Amino acid sequence: MIDTHSHLYDEAFAEDFPQALERASQAGVGHLIFPGIDSSVHDRMMECAAQAEGMASTAVGLHPTSVDGNWKRELDFVEARLAERKWTAVGEIGLDRHWSDSRFKEQVEVFRQQMLWAAEADLPVIIHVRDAHDTVFEVLDSLAEAGTAMRGVFHAFSGSIETYRRIQRYGGFLIGIGGVVTYKNAGVAATVRDIPLEEILLETDCPWLTPVPYRGRRNESSYLGLIAARIAGIKDIPVETVDSVTTASARKLFNLI
Ligand SMILES: [Zn+2]
Image 1 (tube, rainbow, N blue to C red):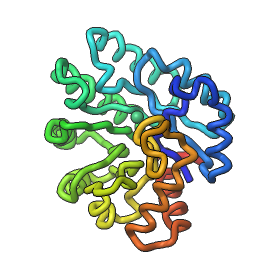
Image 2 (image 1 turned 45 degrees about the vertical axis):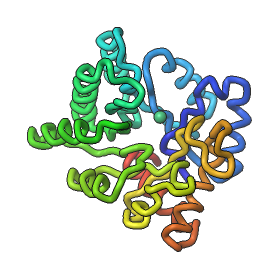
Image 3 (image 1 turned 60 degrees about the vertical axis):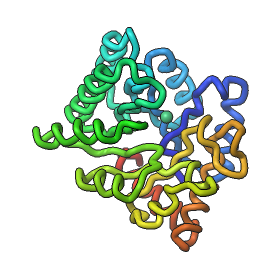
Image 4 (image 1 turned 120 degrees about the horizontal axis):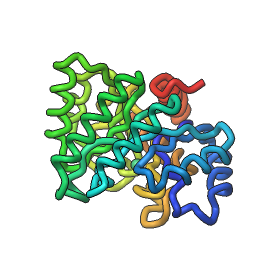
């Protein structure tokens, strides 16, 4: 399996990163993708990826909740990193009205700019969206009209079938399913039933969004199998099928060997 959204480099794992990595490996997680957030965590992310010796790939991007008074300098940081080398993805990027609403206009500009850079660099994007789907779709509509190429993943998807269909219209976007799908009464379970398995990616978003039965504790990549098992249960298919199909999709989208 591939954990397509892991913050195992987060300071929540400052004490036991090597052990958490080993547990993930033991649990059948062969590869991790580390999404960027902002310049403050970048060095730690790169150190952890180096320690993971080929087991982790890295993305660079400015997260919407990190768009603050320093946003111009942070955006310059992303641009400079993108010029340095080929990354696995641009992300995570997007819009978030839930955690920070004060600089929403700037969030939109930052998101749009990074979408353009991803297109220029021919890279997939990792999109984070919370309480702002309409505006994300407005940005994507205007980019699509201008002929901008886009592909990537809507990470931590928790939406309705209507939201999924709207995403599907752009082509090239997959749906990241994480721990929320294991929660009782999670509406996303009904949506997952209708999303073709080929369009789903597995992710933990650790250390957040811990799946049942560990909900309330720190999440980690080794719990990825719980999410795969829940998807298998919802779709009434073998978990091995979920593992192999989602792994193939992740390899293709992120150009992993
Ligand atoms: Zn994340």
